[in-house]
Image 1 (cartoon, rainbow, N blue to C red):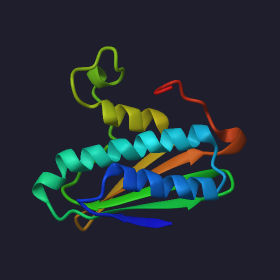
Image 2: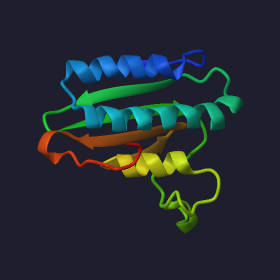
Image 3: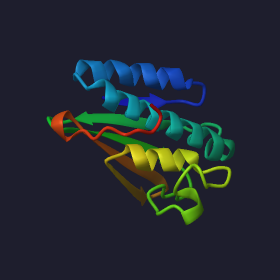
Image 4: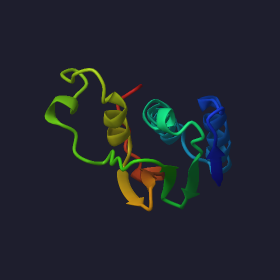
Length: 142
């Protein structure tokens, strides 16, 4: 499933469409929750950091389910930004971090694998979540 997201689309539009796909593929509640937090953080970061310089920003999120995992692929035009780079020490734990950076921390912690590529002005973020017996329960956001 591939979903195009436009500037006027609220985060609920993305979450509802993705929830329908998660249900269709029998994705467990824990994975759905983690994915929804990740999607919300991506949405917020794009609106805060990319949309101001590109008011016509359209980005896509693609769900690629497999038997033992799922991948969400987010693509958006804009300046290079790699959210997979190691966070500065001060950002690694919410209890000691300065203001900002919480979204990157959550995405990193809730993803089983997070990859970034940049090609011809387009950032591509691939998020992997394990399913079934491979799913690891996270205590964040619970």
